[in-house]
Length: 403
Ligand code: NAD
Image (cartoon, rainbow, N blue to C red):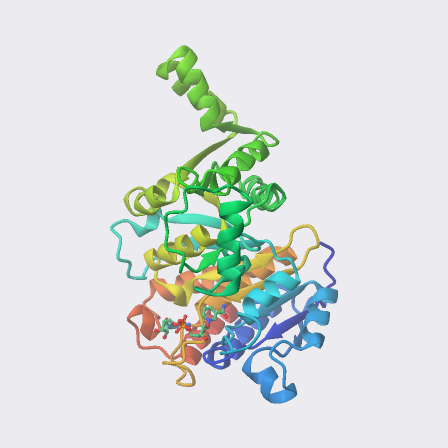
């Protein structure tokens, strides 16, 4: 990615708490860039409309100009957007991801000292989830109960495809779960590239291939195919050695492979994985998974390190370079406009954006400022503290200025 010194970054302020957190996060970003680069580099913020604000201004939830800007400039950052009720598209977020083919949803989950956690050893949680973003049951191909479409599809399954095991009621609503080798492999590729870049030692594929053989099981098999293209030692190799030459030999070869810098690759069934991340979170580093599993896992992991108020995310197409960084939470209507929301999710999404731009020192400085603040008990209400959104950001900015 070639980044100019004054990159034009589109921003979507977002609805609800977006109005509270975005301006504060932006001040933190600018302070950090100024501290590191002085006048040499600067973000040229360009406001883009989407969501409620766009609808009020131009009668559309996702104006063409917004899409065109992101298309041209590659990178944008956004606050949460409300989902319009009764509109033809399901969600503005999903539409944005689909239009830009942002196939990887990347969610780092990291614990900061000073934040209360429901688990015993939250400091052991340090994972990055790569969730496939364009396929799976989220593709939106669903048919309501007792409609011509669902009746026809049932008839087609029975007659044309000779599916005899339809034991569910004919009144069932139906959904389609497309999972392709292309979609799976590009996501898993992204996970491995990240693991290499960040010097991670373990990549885990999470799936329900035991039940859904061709979709989830297909993902698992394609993922292992990708693993072969990287310096890895896989659980498949381990099992093969174990069967042929015994456990001791398998263990020794695994140790030798890891010592030589190879990445250990395994797969875990999704339900077991949700147990394992509570029991043994230290066993996992980079996770690659399909859309629905990724959705559950991201929130479950976010809860372990302080909740959605501090959970960042990015939606990325690594081939075209398009990337949208976003707070993962919603518009939080219950606290919107009160200046009490936690801006950390958006600020940490900004950290991801600076890493993507290659402005590593800016990213690090913001993270150090956040660590310092949390450690010293500077917390917003969602984390049990008393600071307002703006006061919390002021603490960060003061730290950045004097660092
Ligand atoms: P939500 O994430 O808005 O809120 C869930 C809970 O988390 C609420 O109690 C809220 O107060 C709290 N919360 C959220 N963000 C917080 C923050 N920064 N600081 C402190 N507390 C925070 O989920 P919801 O209520 O289910 O959804 C509200 C709206 O947001 C819906 O229209 C939904 O479609 C939309 N939504 C948008 C996105 C997105 O833009 N990426 C994601 C999820 C939901």
